[in-house]
Image: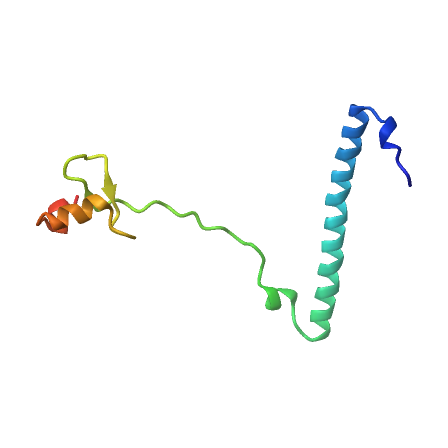
Length: 106
């Protein structure tokens, strides 16, 4: 099927691109479904369910909630640190100045 791109308008080219992208999605879905069926049949032939081999899929994603801060900058109350990860510069400076973590804890 030859398509004469040189004689197509911008609208026609855009429509062609849209239809081609939609077809790509369809072909991928068809391929995945066919492969899923083949793998499931092969697993059953060996006495397994596909979920035993590959798990249940994506499942629920956990949402990471921010950790509450444990320490507050002595000069700027808006600057905090949770106590996890590398110590911020202001924490290292406070410790070097003789303060303890208890002194800057919230």
